[in-house]
Length: 105
Figure 1 (tube, one colour):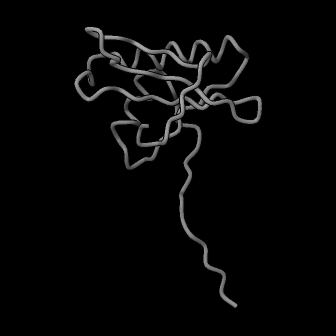
Figure 2 (spheres, one colour; figure 1 turned 90 degrees about the horizontal axis):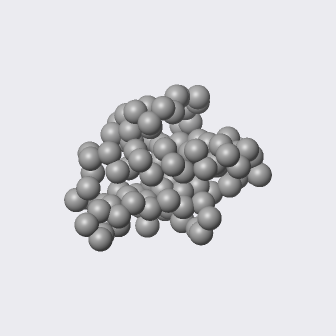
């Protein structure tokens, strides 16, 4: 499992092997029959070598060919992930702010 709790499933997943070891894996989870939520995990030994970009690009192409709207969600605090998404071609659409709301009586 990746930091975001990635769950990969057959048919929506792309893997790339490097020296007989899984270097990167990406896939998507379908939300509301419209969105393809892109997920990625890259082996620490193979980061910054383009393998993550390769599998995310392929998963994105697969989602588009299935008439789905791909989305790459991450936290602004994870600047490496924001930069990665922009490098693959994703553009910022919205920003969410997680928090806890306490209702006072």
